Amino acid sequence: MQPDNKPAVQFGQDVAVSENVQQFITFTLGEEEYGIDIMVVREIKGWTETTMIPNAPPHVRGVINLRGIIVPIFDLRARFGTGVTVPTNMHVVIIVAAGTRTVGLLVDTVSDIISVDPKEIRDVPDMGMPTEDQFLEGLVAIQDRMVTLVSLSGLFGMPTESIKRTAAVAA
Image (cartoon, rainbow, N blue to C red; front, side, top):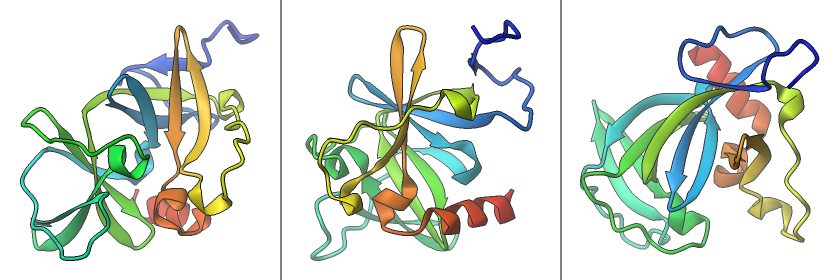
């Protein structure tokens, strides 16, 4: 507990958002739970088949037409090097604004919305990875589990400021 007796992390949509709280949508890939800044999320939709793009890397599932916008769908499991997702009707695509791009992230399930005091976000331990391969921006301990925060700038090779600026304009 923090000094004011409020938990550092709160769950659900009934949480009042203050200036010192960041919100994340959490999702799963297998047994692991991840979070992404709610400000970049545009939509959450069920899995639909994609149109394959020749010579695309294995983590690019293809593209979908989302109300006239061609959206590439990235398989996060494959992007993180833990195998390729075999999508079912239970899988979910999170549509996000990544800088000037709109992309979809294929995940297993969407879990919750969490509110986190930025002081409670811990750095990812240095594991000797090159900077361009760092897809994570932090870790948050929530009761008996750990939520890993995903870095869109790391995933898509763009400056963090560009993603934050786009999210602020879209909000």
